[in-house]
Image (cartoon, rainbow, N blue to C red; front, side):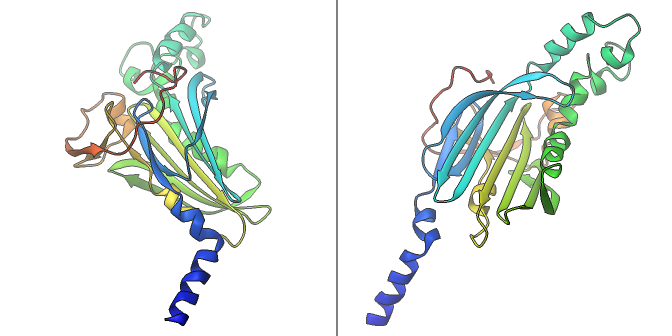
Amino acid sequence: MRAFLLAIALVVSLPGFVFAQEWSLYVNAQDGFKINFPGEPTVTATTWVSEQGYSLPANLYTAERGLGRYSMTAVDYSGIEQQGLERSKACPPGAETCLGQTSGLLLSVIGPGYAFQDIRGALIYASSKFIQRDATVTHYTWAFTDLVEGQTLQLTNADESRTSVSIFMHDNYLYIAEGTVPKGYPEPGLFQQSLGFVDDDGNGLRYETLYSNEFHGLGTYPPPPLRGRGGAAGPAGAANPAAGIR
């Protein structure tokens, strides 16, 4: 019995034990996601500049626990078509590199002012920003969660800390989950792998077949059937008036 109690005491004293116990599921129905956070995150309204130079509304959710840092960025691409139309109106006549595709067979692919092309390339563009960091990419792969496709990366930073990243796009929202822990700490898999999507009532979503925002979010094909809607995934995050309306 004494040996057992000593073993329990040693486990509780480990840096990651209390750290792990304080995690809880955070749900934000307005931005359409759920993810495990170490406590209530701080929410900051910000702007995401897309690959084609569009300024898009975004919310940044951040939290820290010990020496670990965790963030979720939710970017609303739903207004980019209107921005593309406004940009194309101001283009010089015949300036195809500015106009994009305002009519014809490639309209659904490129879009006005390259708006649709910007959405189609959003996952790769977001990943490229991590690849360009002063860090070594040790893993970069295609991935899916709840049958929504995306990408994941693992990086070793210059100070030997480790960063895990999940990047997904659903309903024309871009989601970037980033967790960084010091050298020697367990990788932040609990955070990275817990990302999921919810409807306007905070209910979890899972599709029967693969959902690709490139085709389903842009309306080329209807979204796949839902396997089911789970119960409310947890307490909804506080509404942020600065976020885009889904």
